Each structure stands twice: as C-alpha cells, then as structure tokens.
Length: 295
Image (cartoon, rainbow, N blue to C red; front, side, top):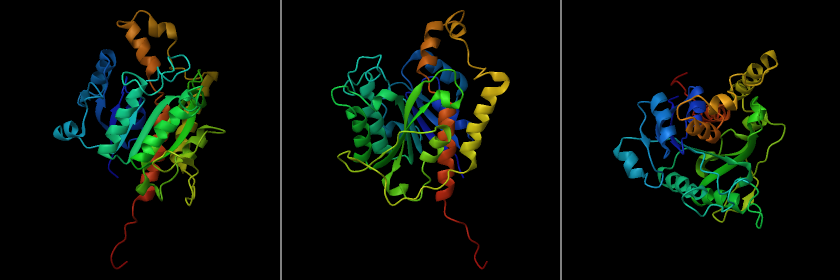
C-alpha cells in the first residue's frame, strides 16, 4: 500500500506529521505555517517539503501548480477564541479560531480521503450562552461538504504524559467512502476508558448516531502502539522521561520565548500516531481482495 500524502495545516513544529510518519504509512507533502520560528523547525527536519505561509491564501490551484496532491489534511487550528483561557469570540474572527473556515474550504476543494482536526476540549461545550454551537458549526461544515465525522476527547495523560492536556480530535472522511471502514472509535477506546463520540449527518449539521454500520475490532497495530507508549512511560517509575522540564525549555536557549510558545502550541505526536495506525488498518480493510485467475 502506498503512503498517504499529508497536507499539514497550522503545522507548528510538526507534531502531526511526526506522529503520522512514525507509522510508516504517511508522507508529508506540504506544510502551512505562518509563524517564523516553527517554520525554521520544519525546514530543519523536513528540508525537502514545501512550507506555505498563510492558509488564507493557499489554494488548490497553487498546490496543483506545485505538483502536490493530497490524501490527508490535518490541522490544529488556533484555539485563542475558544479556549477557556481565551477571548471566547468563537469561530467568527479569521485571524484566530475562525481560520477553521479555511480547513473547510481546502477540504471541500481537495476532497482528501481523511481529515484529522485537533483543538481544545472546550470546542465541544462552548459558548456558554449556547453550549455546543461551536462544535455544531464544525460538524455542520463537514456534513455540508459531504464528510462523515467521528470525534474523541483524548488527553495526553492517557498516553503517559505528566500533564492532562485534554484535546478534542475529529476524524472525518467522505460519506460515500465511509461504508466498510473500520471505526476510529476503536482506536480511541484503546487509549480511554470512556470517550465522547457522536456522528453528524445532514447539511444542517443535525447530530445522530451512525446507523447500519457494524464496528469491528481495530486490530493489533494501534493497541500495540499504545501499550508500547505506556511501557516506556512507566519504566523506572517515570512518565515520559524524555519530556523536558519547563525551565530547560524556557531558559538558556536561543529564541527561548518562541520555543516555549511552539512547544505549548504543539500536538502530542503519540496521539496522531495512534490515529494513524487506525487509519492504516481501515485502509487495508477497504482494499479489494486480490484473486488469481484460474485458482
């Protein structure tokens, strides 16, 4: 099976791509990141992968002219307007959290097989005056362009991190291709004792359970990844021993402030890796069986 080609939007320092590429089944073909310091990090670790600067000006025509085709779009769009610590302005301002609309735009024209979106858990519940409206907008947008979605709240602590870092992860694929796929829900349940999940259908964004689709076991790969992460985490009673202390991140390093912000904004690579294994198993399960004539 050929590697799935990834367009990594709001790339930051590459946590999405690092996690997905660890599976061996994904290849990042383009980044899009506006901040200078993370762009330097991406250029160091992916020197041959183009990095576009502004998602607002990135178009399908530009990608096509550069010879870039994609199978997967990822994006952890800005959280400032939906975080409990932020401005609570929602998805209207296209300089921050409202940049979600450009994920929707690019998904709509590029039609990837898979979409993976990450943001703070408060995306599920806000705003306070109309709980769930922000997430309803995200799911409604996906449904309107013909994408079926699952979502899960997966904290970093469930894969061995010191800190909770609860995040919402949305995994979507075109409705007409979803039949017969393995549910990503099974991968999330490997990491969680319980998870939040619903499926959206209909252009109006009305929520309803998925019907008429049996859920099969996710198989060994995603589970083995999670078990390996926890085994390494618990060795010698330590949790994520490689995780730097905040002081070491903040002090004595050139561009220390930028690095602190970059680490704080990054996704935990272990979670995209877990999701990546589940997607690869779904892809393998959907491949037609090969038969030999006369056998």
